[in-house]
Image 1 (cartoon, one colour):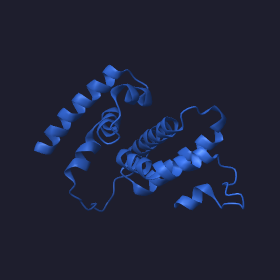
Image 2 (cartoon, one colour; image 1 turned 30 degrees about the vertical axis):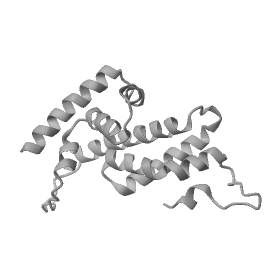
Image 3 (cartoon, helix red, strand yellow; image 1 turned 45 degrees about the vertical axis):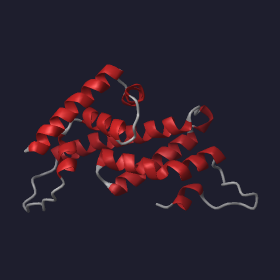
Image 4 (tube, helix red, strand yellow; image 1 turned 90 degrees about the horizontal axis):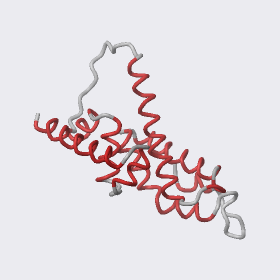
Length: 165
């Protein structure tokens, strides 16, 4: 979905119909990075696009109560990606075995990230991709900073072992 799909058409005054100007500016400046974040958390480009789109729509709906827009949208993206991941695990657990083997694509880091638990994966992506401090990651994941440090430490150790294989 392109930039215009969210902000709509401009009227003669230059304002985007129904969208607060700061939110439109945030969308234009941060959309690509947020889509990358969602992609790193889900592994699905189309899903990442939808997650970001949904996060901005939810932010618009709650706009009157949003004090810090970027952290609010980022949290919405992370929460939606985690929710999508939980849903995918339920779908996969209840899916019959495929009679045809699926093709294997070799991407060791991506495969290794996929073997981490949800909290470790999110903590590592938020720390090393988004460059967020432990305190902000803890707030996003709903845990303590010490839990984030432990998740990152254990996740990196597991990544190292997975990549050595």
